[in-house]
Image (cartoon, rainbow, N blue to C red; front, side, top):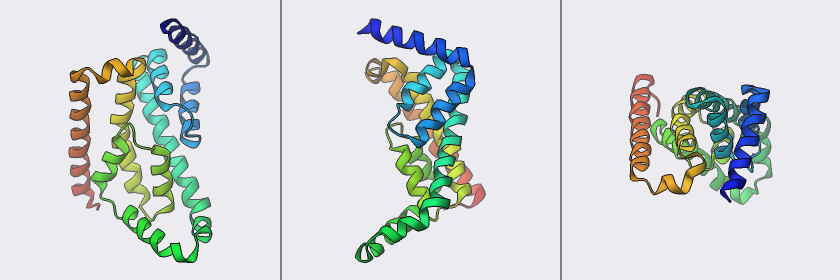
Length: 193
């Protein structure tokens, strides 16, 4: 099994470095639109192919672009259509859910985005069809995705081993707390809910 994974990583990194960073960028943006693709694998391959810093950076920027693209598509093309498809007796319940999403605090949104196992695609859709402010979502994505990208990049191909290492869990907890504190500061400065 280890040989198969090593061969896959070697071949994939050769392809990525052959095309340059644009291939890593496009893979992650594509994953934002097609959530069945493995974001964690793409982030790991970017970091192996382009180094920890540059691989992290292109993964982070690509994820932000992908999230905002998904958010914008649902905001401008599907928001009104979605309301038409909901049955009349379900519209009030749906409106209440959208109100809750629209009024989520900035800090909670950052944490929701930062959690590596959260369904990012559905968060983008929910934010896009809600009335959440674009600026609020954008800033939350910028802050929250730092933790998520670091998590998947750090864990990489040794996910099971890393999850049993208490030091990794402390680092991730530290990053989540850091993201929460930064979001509280930004929330206070920009007076966001």
